[in-house]
Length: 462
Image 1 (cartoon, one colour):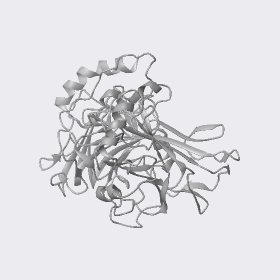
Image 2: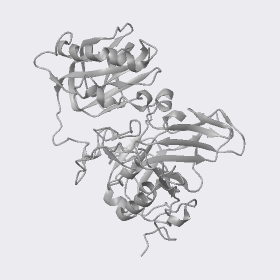
Image 3: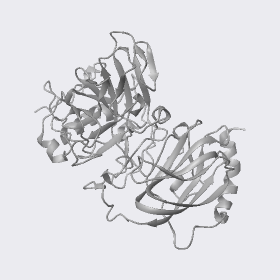
């Protein structure tokens, strides 16, 4: 029986069962904390069934994972909370072995419930814990499918309720509201439009600096070592104003964005990328005409230094992993690379924005990956999808090659947007919305008749 037939067969029963949930809600003093809160997941089923569907209060929608172990789905409660009860309403595909975990920051997790003999259905779990983030971490599936939750409800009491979105939230001014994610398919063109992108070519601007102004703002030396590209002033105290006042190592003067990633080390020696690195700005959605430029000050983190190999491999965005010579799609740094080759990695960022926040406490929840090429309703604003394509001059025996954050799969990167607004708008309109494959000038060599967005100095003409 196919997956969708199973879902259809259970749909009516689920809708009725939602009114008769086993065990009833948590104690009267407890509140439902998780509904319609920002959510993330390790993967989605064939790109569909998004994380937010497990927290939307609708028993007819669901989060579904890839068909592998482990997988997780998490929710941001918006503030520190005391957790007393968790309710899981499984679809046919359930977790046999899983944990309920909490975290104050989305990085360090504590287990407050664990089982190895889950039977699916509706489970009401009495727990005792605290944290801002709560996740279901599945280690063994109960079926050959993935993990699938109609609803994941967290009950308890907020200890530190957010005030006006609270500390760690940076609001967009003005917010972007009233956007409905586009489901349109652009008309066919002749020749076919296969690319919707432009490049930002940026060299290393600062190296081996233990600062991170997004994760550890105002705390110099608090981070593992990073390699910075783009803005030449980026440090622990960086703000949008300081970026705008700085200069850039990018070939386009209008790109004063700060880009950074963990430093690559060969033993104890830092290995820096040589020459300009390719940072793509692409469409991550089918309707590339709907992509809007980043708002000034938007910032986020892609990936995690705490990622496991499976986290990296199953990231919701496309991950081509590491390559060198004839080796490709490696989820860790290869043990050996042919002498004279270089180590490469490609990793895509989320490209759907909630329209409200320039940053959130976990530096991720305001961004989301498209689902089957369409932005989810809780992150409706399509923005450029950044893809890092990094290259390091290191080869031969790679046994001692690693990142300052750990193994190869700990690779991640940060983006703090400080583009000149008209320049970014021109490149986005001409290249992404226009369906072109552009260089940093906004010129498509395959369609030279379309011209360029910028002049020979990589600036707006006139």
